Length: 456
Ligand code: XAN
Image (cartoon, rainbow, N blue to C red; front, side, top):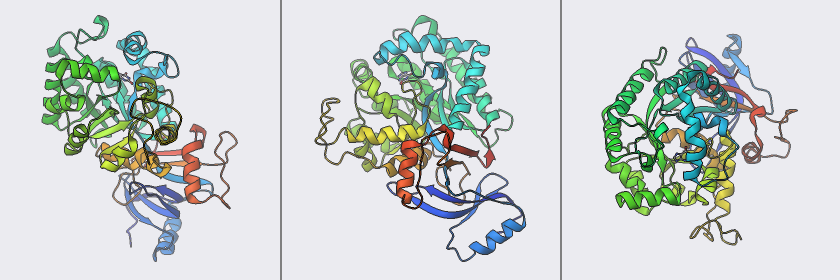
């Protein structure tokens, strides 16, 4: 049995998680023991032979919190793709195609983050909002401004969010407006190096709760030299890398015309792919692309709703899940308006359904009438938790011994909020599906990151 001196607290909770893709586990009255480092020291299902003894000892030591019925513990949600500076833009401006959207709305807004007084309250609000929605790990694109991006990293640290933060690099003067473009590659790379160093040196960041991410915006915005130089840094420091990949006809055609290759080939040749790379979108992949992503053990950040806006297409999620490629979900603020990964999970399911045979909606050539294209709510839940964590190579996403305790509590039947559960006839599978379909911020009652209560 477990020694209790290193236990910070323990929970008894009706618990959902998805350790295996395509399956979920529900443990009624699961006991989880959290150690002083914020890791899961032990777990006990209610039929475990030591369950009663362990529980009694925890109660005697005043370490056990028992969740009420109607509250459900689950792993914290993982957002693989969020543009923090675009938060003020969420919910507007999605009437334009990607290129025009970037030029007309996004670049002018991101450029304002040179002003730290402008940046600070917005960055604090977006981080708080994601936490309040149950996102315990977030992968952020910031802007090209180093100081503001360091501020975002510091705020994630202060608010206790597990965060992967990238200072954007974009230096292609033919595609980026003169006011929002890194005109001098040496200065830009010096800035990136300083950013990496400074984030790793944040006080209290010894365990790398907040990590720097190499962030070439996407193929059109970077020169080949920039991509290669960033690739060297990914290799040299073994860093995470995030970028947009094969996200629209325009971006795909740009890569073909300028390089004669796909985005994935370009990133691979530049040395940018590794086991911690996040390729957002990735919807027009070739079979060779998928094989290459798998060979590098890179991952995909699936952003279902923004795919609709910018690509007019639904991802081939079924095929990608079956291929074994690592895949999780992204909110893509502000290419899609919702900061909730439950919403992204719901959209991932519904978008897989419009691809199915017999659906009378033409989304894009070749993407209609596919047999068995649907994905299940359980698979979407896996992507939102364990799948996302695996893309990041993070020890989170599953509530099992040895993992970091990043978790949330969802409460049903609250006065505000639409999530209604009837325990006498809703099965665990029904409850999980209802949570994905209906849970809102109002239902997120507790949020822990690395064992620390971070909801305020
Ligand atoms: N490609 C992009 N796609 C998107 O959804 N948001 C962006 O900011 C962006 N930049 C390049």
